[in-house]
Amino acid sequence: MENSKIKVLIIEDEKPYLRLLDAFLAEASCRGRSYEVTGAETLSQALELLETGGYDVIISDLFHPVSIFLETFTAIYARAVNTPVVLLTGQENEAVAEEAV
Image (cartoon, rainbow, N blue to C red; front, top):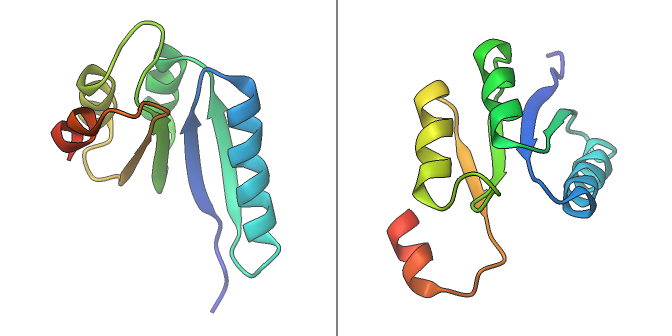
């Protein structure tokens, strides 16, 4: 069985975190799985990529400069209904986490 690449879209406006996630997936690629990572620094850039991307999974920061919290998820989900979305945040607010779930 051929090992196909898992297409990942990472939406993160802070470049160091975008590079960290990319490096993590590159390391995981060396261990038997293969990932094709596309990075988007803005939500609008990510939404454009989602129009044609065909991603297997989306990893996104929950807070972006032009949208926050559930607005971010709603915008992503509207364009990728059948794609798993992993939301990350540096916020230490339990209420935010509960509402996101």
